[in-house]
Every structure is written in structure tokens, then in C-alpha cells.
Amino acid sequence: MVVYWEYAFLENLILDGLLLYLALKCARVKCCILNLALAAMVGAAEAVVFPLITLPVWAGYLVKIAGGILISVIAVRKANFKGYIVVSAAFFLMTFALGGVLVAAYSFAGAEYIQGNGFFVERAPVALVIGIAGVFSVAVVLLAKYIYRYRRIKRNLFSCILQAGERKVRATGFSDSGNLLNFRGRPVSVVSAVTALALFRGKAQEIGRMNINTVNGSREAPVFECALQIAFTNKIVERKGVLITVGDVASKEYNLILHTATLEGEDETHTIAIKEVARKNQGKRERRKLSMRK
Image (cartoon, rainbow, N blue to C red; front, side, top):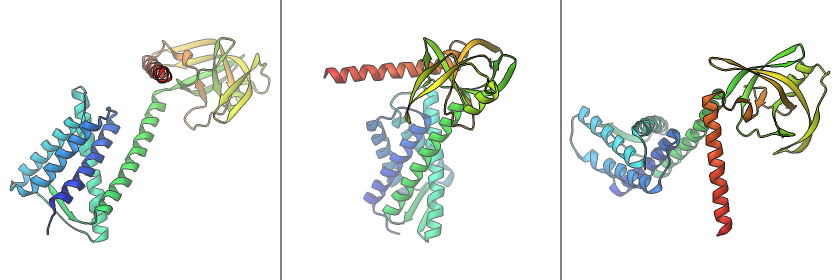
């Protein structure tokens, strides 16, 4: 088998760049293009030079592992020790996963490949390899977004009890930092229509109406008052005179969207999340002001 080093270098440069980018994204570490490009070039050079060196199999794999850790560290602009470990682990995970996908594709297409001593050489169209890597990257990004979104939702779910008079209804509340609804200066949470119907049984007396602006437009909704119990890990918090309105809560995980002020100061994780969102929003506002001045 004849291997052209320039093609091998370019192919590995692209693949290492993709894998490192995915590792950084999955580890939620800030990506620097210069660091990423440098790390990809080091990885590509290693992939070209290493097959020319004769080593025992066990030593070959040790060198490859050390090389993977090296380019993972280079790709990270600045992080603590844990950040380097997470990025390195993510890089190896992505490498093994993509390698398995490529081997399966080569076997299916009848492409020739050789593996051993810690390296992998194939005879396949570069477009096929890059195409498979591209599809793999999109799948990983979508999966990572889904997992992080799922974790965020689960972390901010609370068991709640809504009470109106003598009637009580259990609900699963989601603490959403994007819910900033207010009615006459008081925070308003949002419940699904089914939950509101079960709580009030059509006998609720609204204390007013408010306009709710969403991506689907603006609408007027009634505002009600009730009591609320929220179960934390080690305590139960009771709120009286909580305002709620009926809205489109389109989720299978929860049927109540809590206002940020409802939990603020009661749950450490949620409070930190609120401060982080506020900090990012403040940063965006400052950048917009600077852009306007320019």
C-alpha cells in the first residue's frame, strides 16, 4: 500500500481538528482557533511520522495515548486540571467512536485498511472519510445539546403542591431563569391549563388579567392567587399569595414554570444559575452598548 504523506497529513489535520472541537464543546471549554489549529497540526504530524517508527505494540499504544493527551492539552487555551482531564477523556471517547464508525463503513464498502502498533491506515476516498466525520460531528453536537438540556431540566425540577382553599394539586415545577413575568410588581408563575382546571375546578376568581408576550405573539391571560409548597432536598418551603397564570407549558417533564424569584435564595444550585444568566445578560447588554457607540 502506498501512502502519500501530504494527503495523510491533510486528512488527519481535518479529523483531529473535528475531534478536538467536539471534545471542547462536550467538555464546555472555551475554544480558541489558534490553539485548536496548533493541536490539530501536531496530531496530524504525529499520525504521519508515527507509522514509520518501529515499536512494540504496547509501546505504540502508550505513545499514541501520550500524543492524544498532548494535543488535548494544547487545544485548551486555559483551564484547571479537571478541565484538561475532561477534554482529554472526551477526545479519546470521540476518537474511539469515530474509529468504530469508520471501520464499520470500510467493512461495508470493502475499503482496504491496516491497523496495528497504534496506527490506522486506510485506502478510501478522502471525501468519504470527511463526509462520515462530518455526519458524526453533527450527530455528536445534537446529542450533546440534548444531554445538557436534559440535565438542565432535571437539575431544576421540583416537586410542588398548589393549594386553593381546601383543594390541593401536585405539580412538577421547573425553575426557568427566563420566566420574568410580573403582575403589579409581583412575580407570576405559569401552570398548564389542565393543572389550573384540576386546582380550581372552574370556581377560581381571577384577581386581574395580564399580557403575555411569547414567540407565538401576545395574548391576555387571567391571573390567580394560591398557596405553593416546594420540596427541596432537605426542607419544604411554603409560599402564600403566589400568583399564577395559565399558559402553554408544552413539556412532559413539568406542568408548572416557576418564577425566578420563587426559589431565589432557597436553593444554592438555582441561585448560582440565576446569577450566571444575569451575568451573561449584563455582558450582552454592555457589548451592545459598545457596538452602538462605535
